[in-house]
Length: 286
Ligand code: SF4
Ligand code: SF4
Image: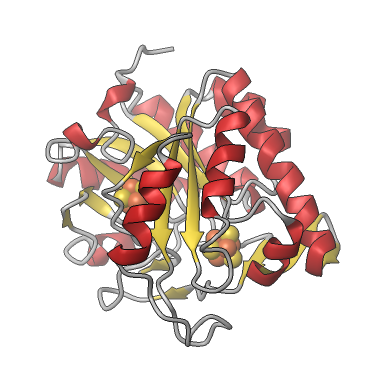
């Protein structure tokens, strides 16, 4: 396996954000849970937030698209998969994509972003494929609070709701953090701050994430989105977020430069090119 410089991930290392870019390959349309803030849709350039993409690619299409992206933006150092659903609700597509990219571009860092629900059976595959960075989105460590965030959780063919679903998800997330760390993978925990739901619980999430070995936390303000149960909630401002990050930093390092990117984000964090590459992605998806 090629030795990679793991410091060249712009999300995990702020110093490299101006010189190293990432591409999100949208190969994972399905999800195995439903968060009350999520509305996934296909959109070319109008919206910039997680879950939005201008198209979905098959693995071989993602490999072609990757070639084209690198021609246009050679500063890309990271190939990531962040949806538009969850990578491990689409494991065959995700692993095949990683295999193809690994074969053609072994110098790239590989990154996955997941809710953690379905990742456990694939931990060894992830490690063998050389995935160096994984994000687990965990916004509650108390099932009573989780039950307000997730409307359902699907385990195989069974759908769980309420605290039972939130408890299953939490168990998987904690086991995922532990299993990833046992395999030497760098782990970030994304925690969405939802006013009136978990804002006074986020520091507890930081404590628990740290105790299970996570390396860094990314406290992200909710982006209220139309046609979701949280559409009418206020978007948290710095007044709420900055003190939370300060308190959470006592337990775990903090990411402070997240751009809440699309599922087809591409380029430097501060210079996203998904709009200009929208046509390229759509051409590859046909
Ligand atoms: Fe949406 Fe991600 Fe939640 Fe799935 S895990 S419902 S894709 S935000
Ligand atoms: Fe990085 Fe945040 Fe964008 Fe993910 S959403 S690629 S963590 S800046």
